[in-house]
Image (cartoon, rainbow, N blue to C red; front, side, top):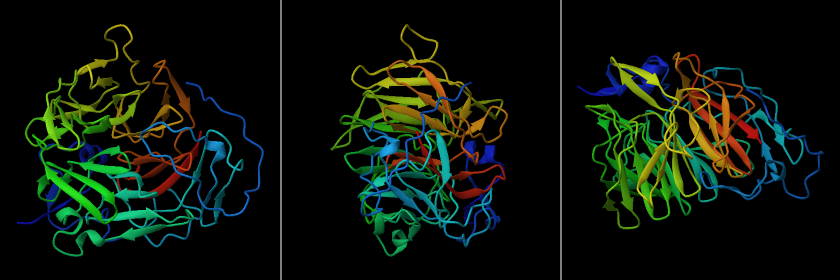
Length: 402
């Protein structure tokens, strides 16, 4: 009997271990296609010269020297054609130009063509691109002017399209390297996936089936020549501590130490030549429990450290959470949204200085979400989609200027 992924309570969606699919027709939530705040003072408004095209984009998770105040981004929010998002979306045109968005603020961006949760987002071929998180295999690309998203369904155009991908997936991990985007593992209707899909352009992808075990909701990143996949939930044992390392470009396996704490649903980012893993969940008595752990992997030394450990260990999260998203901007790691220990989605934004290990608080996400994607584009953070408080995939996009 065929199965389709269902969208139950957000906790169950984020952390189901045996399977994230259920028998029967998809429920309405998967449409057929459808503490202290630190602020910088706002910069004076400066009229842009010439075109209003976006400035050169930065690529997460590598640190960028672009500052939020230097971005020149035009964003239009057209009237949505999909069911209402968790919070009302303004229909007026929004313009983000140099100096017109205050520091430490969020503004609403263009709504996704399709609500998504458990997806990834990154810069690909110079464009902000959203991958998967839908019941069908799709991409969405932000138009150059930043006004709307273009839906790309060429993944199902024929045999072998997009490396043979033919079924939409969720809960894959993201890694980026030299303009390439990796979608790692995840879940489709048929179960967990053991593949790594490398996108070099929206219509050019390569697939390798080498994850052992196959996992969903893992942490991942590329450090130097090493592609690192840490933790995640497998089909039998739930969250597990295994670290899988592949040497690029030949995908040779490299021995790697296990994580101190096996978690799934953790956020991750690469900073200072190390992979940082934030939060995640364990299973206790069959129930997911959000953790505040911060675990850091040095691939050269093949060594993990975690909060509360040796001298120089990172500080724990200010708030336990899983299913959050992380990205690096201006050398700082931003941890956005997620699901707290009480099982409710949150909008809290915490900022880590990876040099000092200190956390500060930024303006909260206006629309709290878990299972969202976070990317850096034109000197700003883009919080894209996710699971809202109504337990439904969302098309909300909100844009943050540090």
